[in-house]
Picture 1 (cartoon, rainbow, N blue to C red):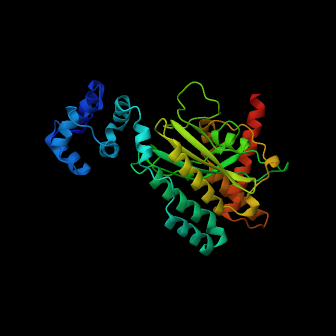
Picture 2 (cartoon, helix red, strand yellow; picture 1 turned 135 degrees about the vertical axis):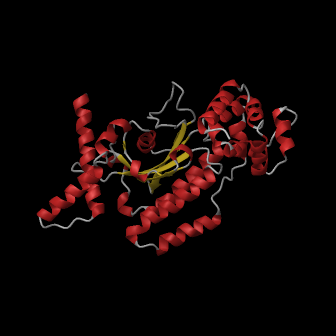
Picture 3 (spheres, rainbow, N blue to C red; picture 1 turned 60 degrees about the vertical axis):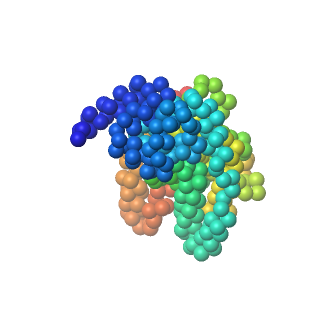
Amino acid sequence: MKNVNELFQHKAKYMQEARTWRELLGKIINDPQEKQRIAEALGIRPITLVRWVNNQSDPRAHNLRRLVNVLPEYRESLLPLIGEELVDFPTMLAEELPEEIPSAFYARVLDANAATPPNLRYWSICNLILQQSLRQLDPERLGLAIIVAQCMPPSADQKVRSLRESLGMGTGPWDGDLTQKGMLLGAESLAGYAIISHRPVSIQNLKEQQSPFPAQAMKFEVSAAAYPLMRSGRIAGCLLVSSTQADYFLQSRLTLVHAYADLLVLAFEEKEFYELDSIDLHVMPSHDVQQRYFSNFRRRVSKVMQEAVIRHEIIDPARAEQLVWHQLEQEFLQLLLQTK
């Protein structure tokens, strides 16, 4: 039995030597047990894997997609190698994706909207929609992050200056709940641009030097789409979807993202929508800079609540958090002025 270091060395060697995905697969299935495991996971015979390796047959797009999922440790090598042989691979995958939200899911959201108490409606509806959208937009868990960025309530000048990443979920490298990693977004972000222009926008490859839209790519993000959350011409925020894959947001996926954005509008109260002329987004610091400020977020919330007690006031945790978000927004705006 090889130890972990030996296995890692073998995998690294395979990835360095392989010039095509077929060569890489061939090296992997040299291990008879691994060949049998992969064949069973794909629901095919082991000889079919051999034919793929020898270029005697071509797998269907859904089998290639499943192959990447069955070999997550080789994902970063397999995807570009497959793309070199099949330039239209992203299109092939997108063609298999349903362009509509299941009608049964609409019924679930409407039931939640009717039955959930007002103080829990936002969380309940958003969680339902984020979970379903992840399953439908990234069925093979290649790597997708979906974030709801909500307009920060206006401060003294009655202007919305930033968006708060209030809820988020992901697959792949962003697996799990992204809510605790939420930051403030502004005019420098793709979400901010979608809000300012009040129209959807997408970027197919954030690694390309030239892009007509502003965007600060987060770690692992290669393509992204942003849809404003609008009702009667007013805006509550933005749905931001990011992928680890280039050219992921072809029309079928954009259609789905748009549909989920429309459905998310149900999660917001009327007072959370703002007129376009009351939105004046400013530039927010990078995620790295913001992270230093957010490292003591919980401590700051506790301090706000303690100070309220001293003043003989009662502030619940949600209100205390909102006050801290406003404090941070003001600090970021001051930071921007100092750097000009």
